Image (cartoon, rainbow over all chains, first blue to last red; front, top):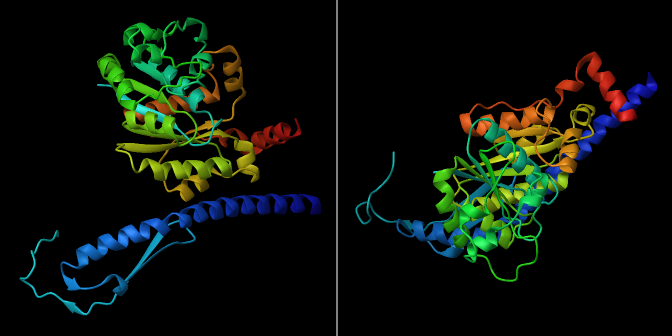
Length: 95
Length: 264
């Protein structure tokens, strides 16, 4: 009985190791991609935000990380000095 | 107009050509007109897998260079008259082949077929770009091994840059006994980590090895053939049914089968 339990434990730990390795490999690959995309994304967000507020590149913080489930998490923080007044830009929005 | 589906993977040796050939057989048996296009230039084997290597007279390069018409280069399957192969060049070809020139050939042949299955070379370089640029849909083939899943995940990301209607995952060479004993990554884990749609699972079946030796389709009563048939039905009719490779190894008889397989 003891040997059987030992075998089961070994198999469970094998599966766990295998899953963890796969997870870490995929997460690492995902984490290496955002470095370049952050700069491109930041400039595009900045371009859009500038239509509505006074903001510079140094006021915008953008970070992309990967969570334990393999999803990308986007952290965007912007410190804005002043918003433009309604009427000074085209009001177009989707419901 | 034919639906153009590329079979790609990133990693080599995962079974793109084998799946391509067998999907073609299943679809042709369903009464569909199928063209198999081998774009693995120089390292092509689709003709060998299909047992048609002795029938090749012209290849795709002859068509591009105007030595023959596209229809002349097609090879019809001996048993399935609705199945055709457009072979690739066997030797090294030093001129650049643009995907547009292959697209012209496919536009000529489009009206004759329901499906065009494109066998993509391994890697993510020129050959991959050429094959994917021609397709409307993609099937990414992976095996349940970390290296293969990793490459397939990268290919999924790269395919986002192309105008594809859909991208599916097929897991090949799945061993139900090893999955149940925890020695192989489960299909659910792969799908969960890759966050993609699963089209099908192909078991690691000995009949596939036999097919590769003899050439032609896998034995129609085999487990592998059932799995290929499910994928073909899923593509054509939208009936989503995934082959359960662990079914044979569950229960009392299954556990004996599992033990015997491991012992042998």
